[in-house]
Length: 389
Image (cartoon, rainbow, N blue to C red; front, side, top):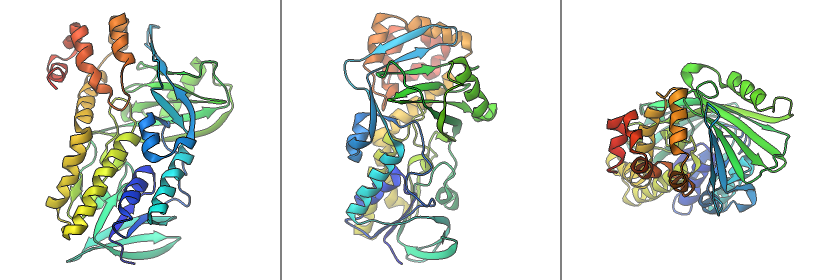
């Protein structure tokens, strides 16, 4: 088999690349799991634009219009919106919807097929994989890695690792919350050091999870403590997932005949860990670059650098600003976080926060800093740089 393009990873991002390229080039997707959408990944909280892009409206479980942020000392700030700010999706169904779009476009999928390595030829890449326990070999002009945090494609291409990461764990419990319109976010080093915890209403079930910096060990002990503190430890656990979220893209996300996208390229949002929106934007950029490369018969790193220029133009500023804000956040003590919560509990600031877009959370930073200039003392150089961008 000699496809023009091989995509490693059949999640939403890899499927998006395949759906956009398959009408212009022979596209093959290698998915290591036996079934698309399994195991389930992430909290499934996205903006309506993500669902619309994926044509996956049928996967929506609930709509969220507001939220409550809980600070370590007990302060809470409530954010109320007049419109849907986010939706909760059934992640397995969402993944399948993206997969079906790729199939409709003509992409081929090989499940239970694990990419192992590639080698370079004069005019192609020789790709090795293990499919259903047997070795398989392919030749392709272009390889796209959408294979997650431990990207084998990125490693084989000697692309550097992400700058940071957090470990996460989430469980769906069999309890229905009375308030279905708002999610809850919990801050504090005792709860989720280096990140935050969340409670998301999903109709008859509820998603509870958190992430922690890797240096604090397994997130499971923090999740157990959090469930107990919230009086949810006696609820039936319907399912649980865990994983690593990469933060901070490497210097390059391409090489000769190679592009990496999504978590493989650490394109998750540093402030929330969400990667579906940013990954799908990057998928669009990778797909358009792949089609141009085929038309020009030029798969050089110079040609594929257009991919990075494009995704950085779309989401680079958000990732950079979010990373800078995160650098400040991880150094804060619970006492300092509480002080910030009290400073933000003002009508003008709450109005700014309520107008936010969870796909571009850092865009609020300049307005908040202008409203509360005392926040600049936390890190004058880092936070001050946000005012001009």
